[in-house]
Image 1 (cartoon, rainbow, N blue to C red):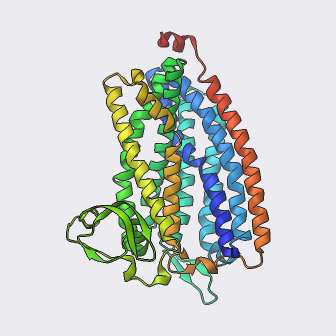
Image 2 (cartoon, rainbow, N blue to C red):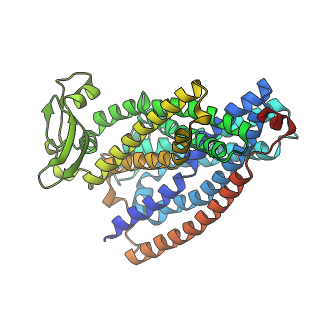
Length: 447
């Protein structure tokens, strides 16, 4: 194992673990706003209790996100010093904006959301929930602009010494890749939050406790989850795929397992990439579907991997292929689950349909898996580039950190995050075990 591989492994481990938490808080902010709106403007006491309950889970995940996010900043200098030296003048803009503007907006108003309900008017407390959601979404946008520039660099100039200088802040912030990636990411985060909400509602329904709250959580989670799941595919997923095929056609071919250029290309639903024969083993293919989905023409030509130089290919085509298909497969199953659950909810049968309740409860980890697979697809697809078309990954890592030091740090992160996971699990179970607090009005609504 060379140092660059270990640097990538360490960054992948820490960023994957970190993203488990903000992907929930970004979506959960919207769920809380919906419930607070019902409580503030419709007098819905049960919704107020549910919002207060979910705010505790938001705070727990926010703290975990902060603790696991701080090491990410240090890794740019420790593991990727050549990248930081060359591109720091560009990516430093949005990383600073995220900390100075978005993070402080979110954290300041989170205090008011958790501790200020009795001191603020109902409308002011609702406004604090909106501010928390706005802060979390703004934070996401600044981080995504950073990543979007690495995927599709704009608004810059490469100087004679190899460093990269920002020439247009507006071009950087309004990179055409960023809004699409932001919308797709937020849709994924909202899907996670709505599925978690529905899962909690299903859990309480099956346990026979907090019935009024369980019904509210189920209703909000299922309806919101259906909207989020569909929007993950259309339009945000489709728009993201169009950007990839336009600007990163090699990544697109690898994602689809499409090795050879052909007209009327079929869509592979399943199969195993064989890198020796440059084919998919045991494929199930829908004829001409890939051409139609990509260009809205059944006879359209799709470029295959073999049409591009081998040194430009992603360095792990099978993993990229599987990550992409795992994301799409889970997303499709969640659309189906949410559609069936919404139909049962409309018919007022969801609370009595135990198989659906069990499916909703057990679905909790799957949006996390899908979101993680989606980010793996984006990052593996950009390879072998660290900044697409400008800097290769091997040219951005630190050269003075030995493999032994990297392994030592990686094992340290694993041990620390194992302890944090146990603490998080204990606190999560404690919050869920207590459930939403019940006022006399809410108790009356349950009867």
